Image (cartoon, rainbow, N blue to C red):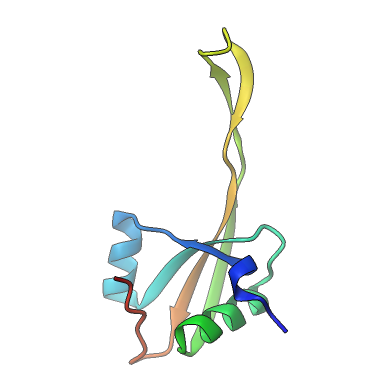
Length: 96
């Protein structure tokens, strides 16, 4: 049993994600770092009641940054895992 709430964290709202959704029927989600492609596909199918044809994943590593509030001490700026999900022709996800 896949728990979709733990796999799908949020929908990525960017200009590139909007273009992918409008032109290629692809939707971008931030997902759990330990989720694999099959789990992501099943979670999207459960939550949005659509058919997934392909899942591409990528991991953005955290960047090292200096923190001005802590007088130049090093810190990190968020890394995350992103999934670009392609849906079957005719399916769509309505995000309001």
